[in-house]
Length: 543
Image (cartoon, rainbow, N blue to C red):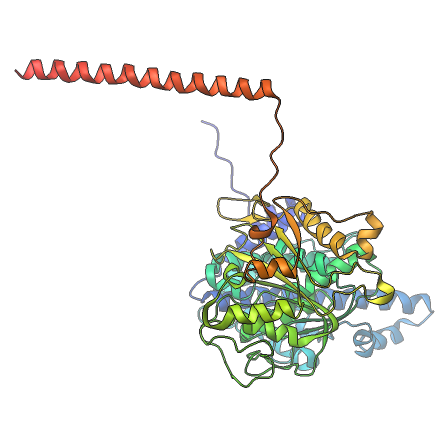
């Protein structure tokens, strides 16, 4: 009998990993062994905090090496170089967090076995926050606790140290670590089920909103920002379309209700190099608006669906189109976001399908007022199973304060029109329970919108808009009135045009189906005869 192959250690698996995805999977498996008695929210903060500390330390070391090289090239002596390398302004001036020596990953990894690793990590988090005002109160100090397996924690620190996060020209280290952070966020959302929707929106849904809005420059706002995914995708969109060296001309503003999620968002933005204003602390958007005077160019959000218990004030100035019902905040979210839009601002919002047709508690009247004010630009019906965290069918609302050609922009004049897109049949299943929108799906939907609106990207691609039965339709306000202001795309796009078939092909299909049915009939008759004979034989035997 041949000897059984020895199972490779995590370190051996890690060293043999050749792609970021393999590294991510190995780290996730190792981190999952630390779950212990921690609750899911604490565990999430715990692991993502480690990745963040690795990121700030790597960024610091990278800047340190660059600085040493620059100084040497300038002929600075080694003694003087040492002084410059400990000048914090040389780091903060390059938008790099200052990391004290005892918080640097190399120090922690070197001392993890001789000293308590949990104590070292808590001290490192504290030191980084103390030295960087933007991170005050953000990083977790939960590593030196009784419910944390210190042996496994030391092993995880070693694995993260060994992981090849070093970047290449087309994939900088920052991007690799950012992808690890996003991968872990997605896995935590799946693990937490419904609660995961509080901090994570499926990437393909976020990308669709960003591809349609095209936030190249201006103020971007998310009033329910979760872990900051909308901002990360906006930044990636600019890099993808304008090039990595292009300056990101967006100013980010966000708010989050949950304290732990707010911390995750602050870390997520920092790890992606985004300087965002998420306010000094978390807070309820309705009861405590952290950006009261903001007028945004773009609003992108996935607020929690159908909130029944929310901070409702009937006299709130935001309710310009009607007071939202006490038992559902969907139209509170819509009106809050409208109140934040600048004169030519646009918004993309994920909401439950019911928001498109509900007539209860005055919602139908609010929707009518919004349509008559010509604020609804586009409605997209999404396919099922995009959201692991909820089975509620979802849609996208795209709002616009100005649907005119807007002067020099030369857009199509879409005043008095609403574009309806039915994407319910799109997407592909990645496993039994989760669907994603593919690159082709994202391009198809975004292209239809841009062709309809006549954007620069549509002109560059030579796109022109036309209605496609079963997929998209541009409806005038009169048509929307005829439908009672119900905004469900299926009501407007009609049925898919059937392709004409050759008469002979149709006849052949009919013949084949007829034969199949006759065959099934003959088979059932024979089976019935056999059953009857068996029953007769059985009766004779009993008699």
